[in-house]
Length: 337
Length: 294
Image (cartoon, rainbow over all chains, first blue to last red; front, top):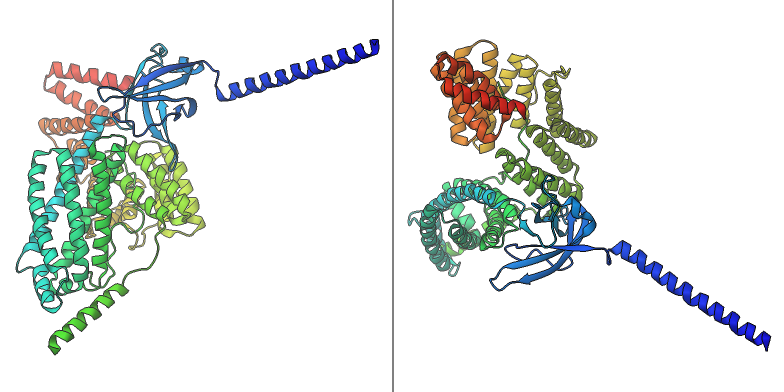
C-alpha cells in the first residue's frame, strides 16, 4: 500500500516537473520571440499627413539612420480627403527622435523597397512626444521641385519650337513629305497617306494650342498638352517610317531636321528624367504626365533612330547619336584666379 | 503601267535595303539604365546640383555592376570621382578615380585610363605635389574633355606652350553642343589665366570678355564669376574693378561659394574705402567676419 502511494506521489512529482518545465520553456520562447520581434516592446504612436497613400502600406518598415524602429500601423482616409498615417515606433528610440523630426519615403538601393524614414530632427529640441504630428517631406522639397520644373518647361519650349518647325515642314505643300506622299499615293493606295495628312494637321493644331499654354507657363497644363502632343508625334513618326526612304530621296533637309530634332528630344528627355525622379513622390497628375511624356519620348527616340538608320535618310548609316556610350562627367577644373 | 510597276519594285527594293542597316542586337537593360542615369547625372552636375548628381551616379555604378561591363564600371567610377572633386570632396574623388584607374588598367581601356590619369595628376598639382607625368602631347583622337584637362594640367605645371596648344585644340573643334561649348568657355578661361601669368594683360582681358559673352549664352555662372574676378585684376579704374567684383560677389552669393565671396569681399573693401563708402565698408567687413567665423 505504502509502495503504491510512493509510486503515485513520484508520478505526480514527475508530471508536475514536466508541466512546470514545459510552461517554463514556453515562457522562455515567448520572451525570446517578444524581444526579437518587439511584439511586447513599449511603443508610441506618431502621425503624418502625406498628399497620397500610394507609397504606403500597413506594416511598412519605418527606419531611422538605417535601423528599423517601427512600422506603419494604420492608414486612414479622413473625411476631408486627407490621408492620415499612423506610425508605431519603439519607445526605446524615442530619445533620439526630436520634436521637429520629419517623415519621408525613401527607396533602399536600386531595386530595394520603399520604406518610411524618420529623421532625427534638431538635437537641441526635446524628444518627440506621443501623438505628435510629423512633417512630411518628399525627397526634394516642393519649392525645389517647382524650381526644377522651370528648366524642364524651358526645354519643353525649345522642343516645341523644333516641333513647330517640323510641323511647318510637314505641312508645306511644296515640302519633302507632301511631295513624297503625293508621289507614293499615285503608286500605292492606302500607305496611310490620308491618315498621315489628317494627323499632321491635328498635330499642327495641337502645337498652336500648346504654345498658347506655354506662354502662360501653367505648368500642369503644359505638361498635359505636351504629353498628348508627344503621343501624336510618336504616331506621326510611326506612320512616317514606311515612307522614310522616299522622303529621304526627296529632300536633303530631312537629315538636318532629324538630327536637330533628336538633339532636342535628348535634351527634353534628360530634363524630364530628372524632374520625374524628383517628382515621383508627389501625387498630383504632374509626375504621371512627366513619366508618360518620358516614355513617349523614349518611343520617339527609337523611331527617330530608326528613321536615321535608313541609308537614304541617314546617309551612310555611320551617324552616331549622342546617347551612344555612357556620358562623361565634366572634368573638375578649378579656374579660380 | 510598266513605269509604275518599276517604280513600285524600286520602292520595295529600297525598303528591304533600309532594313538591312538595322542591328539585330538585344540591349542589356542594365547597360541602358547605366547610360541613362549617367546622362542625367551629367545634366545635374552641369547645373551644380551635387546631391541628385551623386544619387544618379551611384545608381549608374550599381547598374554598371549589374551589367558586368568593365567599360561602364570604369566610366561610372570616373564620373563619381569627377563629381566628388567638383563638389569639393577631394579624398572621395581620389578614391573613386583610383577605382576607375584600376578597372581601366586591368581591361586596357585607354581613354578612361588617360582621363583618370590626368584627373589624378590634377589632384597632385592642387596639393602642391609636382606630378612627374608630363607628356608633350596627347592623341588628337581623344575626346574633348581629355584635351581640356590636359591643357589645365600643363598650365598648372607651368608648361604654357603645351597648355596653349591643347586649349587651341579644344577651341578649334567644330562641336556645337552645350557640353562642347562649356569646354570652350573653360578653354578661353584657361588661356586668359595663362596670358595673365605671362603678363599679357590685353590678351587676357580679351579672353575674359569671350568667357563672359559665352557664359551669358550657355549659362556657366561659376566660370563667369571667376572671369569677373580676373577682370577686376586686369582693369585699371576703381569703378570698373568695383563693378566686376560686385557682379562676381552676387554670383558667388547665389552659388553659396564662400571662398569666392571671401575673395571678392577682400578685394572690394579697399576699393570702397578709397571711395569713402564708410557704411558699405562696415557691412562688407561684417559679411567677411561672418564668412571667416563659419
